[in-house]
Image (cartoon, rainbow, N blue to C red):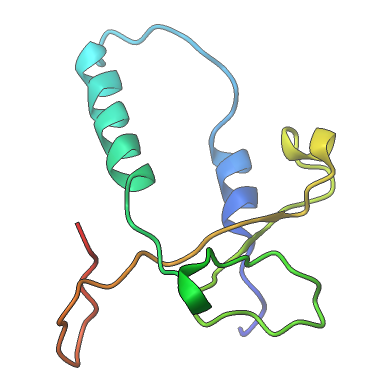
Length: 109
């Protein structure tokens, strides 16, 4: 219908409730897999701005966003980030692999 989608953080907060309970269907391998995925994502090379400087996506609204930015907007009532007064989470695209041809973008590993 053309209405804006909710922020990725709003979806995350709604879906993932802070309730912890044992579940016999899941083993410690689930935690190992989660850590593997986390380290793979957090170690990904990010695109850089002019002069090789990091890109800031959460600037004042009057500044045009960098084309590699996709910031996650946070609710002022976010259960975690409100204590820090944050309303924007930085999100920069991964760096492209060198020597890529035109077409789908391959990320650097």
